[in-house]
View: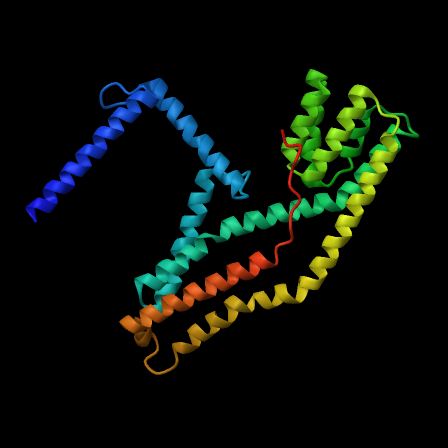
Length: 300
């Protein structure tokens, strides 16, 4: 026992020594504390890494504190309900962890809905820009901002931010960079690059390019609508992956010893396995029904 404790203390001391050496070289540590400048840089780096992680997870627009608070609350509620039904810590932990993922799924769904609304709107917006730059005679920036006023509410803020940037800098490339960043949409990237080329070097064929682009967006939009229509029945059936096992779990409370049967070691093991299978089926069903998304190629 003493040998084990000695080895553990030596390992912890070595790890702490490596930590001190690394933070001295990387963050400017002096003694056992980081300097104020190093602490500030470390916090900024951590916030940046958290923000990038949230963006990659499809949670752009949420703060880390919001995510933690909501996820913790849902974890507690899910774990409490599972403990009441299954009388065990392991099923409560699994159920609570699954419940804690709901904010992530809801935010991703809002992002998907926002992108779907943008996909519906882009063919009309492209046609409006084409008409304004063609028969009406507007300049490319003016046509873009006028069309943006008729964009869906989820896109309008991005056009307004780009318009503010244009009024301040009159740099169209920088303005389109703001618009692309705020919209975060492959179609927006293509439209912006087309308009930037026409604005900088001119483009007598801009009308035809925009017309072809609008036709292509309409074809893709129709494909997605057809695919979603074919998936409607499957999406409805997917809900039963959660509803039916939940109903059976509650029904089990009225059979035999009910909750006491769940509390046995065998019962706890089987409940955890069943919960894992339900969650896996739910995630797998959502994965195979996900439509492919166009990748951004002009996002720099």
